[in-house]
Structure formats: structure tokens, C-alpha cells
Length: 348
Image (cartoon, rainbow, N blue to C red; front, side):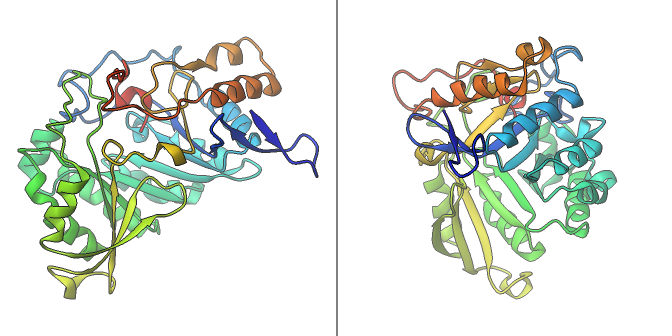
């Protein structure tokens, strides 16, 4: 359903679903390709990538983004795969920044090539960057990602900070029997560097469908481990943001922290779901609209777009899809079935 502003006929004030949630946050996957092969995401040999014809081109992405903004979307996050491998990422950001009204623009990346593009992205209009980084240990990084690129990621994070991105957020997935014990060191590094660390529960979106809730590191475990080293003050959720926020007011190396106190986020999508406040939509690289990260059904926008649908017709298709958005992801229930698409194919 599209809600409209009665004072300005035809002006959309938001995409509203049957539970009263308003969709304002759009994740656009620019590509399904990635420069890493993280063990919890995809096989060592990679996946069967989309062809150039199957992927949306830049004009199609910009057109759909304009339609979404016209329907009330206020923030757009560019994802992948790895969005930095998209050859026209910088001009794509500039095109999205020129939309009216201008959405907030952010990027989720593994950071490997940020040294080459961070300053250009900021100049083009990028507002925020999240870098995925699970370890500061070189051997463990190579084990988790199947690539020896830790130095490149750390250089990319520093380049983003130097380009003026603030806050610069680091996304970390903890894996049992791998990097779990490194959590305190990761938080101390982030506090010392002035970055905002966010631990994310591992979600059932792996290519091999080997995810197990029993094997997953939960938010409770993460907070118990960190609480033994740091003084954490809960701040709750800010708006529709998925992270539960904490002020870090004391802990190891405090005299070297970049600020008097730091911040920590924990995204517990599995054990503490925030579905009732979800305001997100996802557009895959091949033009499919997903109203939930874990949805098993998608709405095709690429087909109507290429068949000549008008903006109004595309908007009606989007509104219908949003109206039918499911109540929640249902992980842990008897009816939950993991989506066929992996995280890299859906977009983070």
C-alpha cells in the first residue's frame, strides 16, 4: 500500500505493509560477485555468477532507485557480493546522490580496494561505510576468507577514515572454534581507532546450508564474553536500526581510546529478532525485490522494467509486494526453510 500526503495530492509518504510498518530503507545489490570466499558465506570455488544480461545495468538501477525514492525510501545502501568490484561504482553513487529528494547513501564492503576509491566515493556523495572484518590475525583471516588480504582491508579502513567517513562501522561475524576468543581484542582495536564495532549473529544464508543454531555464537554469548573485559552500558535500539547499542565506558587500553567512551553494536537477527520494526527492502543484482532477507518469494522488477513499464506501474508492483510482507523471518519455527539464495546473492 502507498500512503499519500493529503496536502500534496499524489505525493507518497511511504510504503506501508499490512502490519503498519513503513519501508524507508532500500538495499541495492550491485553484483553477486565477491573478491573473498568467506567460509560461512560461499564455497571455495565460488558460485555460478549472474551473466551481464541477467544483472541490472546502471541505468536500470538508477531508474528503479528513483521510483523507490518517489515512494518514500530515504536511505539506500549499496551491497553485493562485493560492491567495490562493480566497475562504475563511483558514478553510480553520484547518480543516486543526485536524486530528489536525496537519500542517505551508504556502502557495505569487505574493504579490499577502498584505498583506491574511498576519497572518490565520498566526493561522489557517499555518506557512510560499513566494512566487514572478522579478525585481526593474518592467518585466521586467510583461513576464514580463503584469501591473504588482511593488510589490504586494514589499509582500506584507514583510507575510509582519512576520507572523512564518520562513523565508520566494522561488521564482525564470530565463528565458534575460530575467532570467538578474539572478540575483546577486536573491540579494543576499534575503540583505539575510533571505529564503531558491530557483532552480527551468523544467519542461515550460507551456500552449503550447513548453518545450525546450536553452532551459532549468540548475542548473549558475545555480551557475556565482552562483559568480562569491558563495562558496557545498554542504550537499546536507535529508531529502526537493527543493532542493540551499548556505550563502552571502561576496559582494556582505555587510555588509548580515540574518545572518552566508545560504542558497540550487537545485531541479533536470530535470537533477538527486530522484525516488528523492520523498514527494509532489498533489490537483488538481477532485479528481484525481496521484502525480507529470509523470504522464499521474490517480486520481479527487471521484467516489467525491460518490457516498458511506467514509473507508476513499477510503483504499483512494489507497493503490492510490500503490502504482503511477512510478519517475521520465522527462524527457529517448524515452518522455517532457509532461502535458496545465499547472502552474497541477496545483498547484505
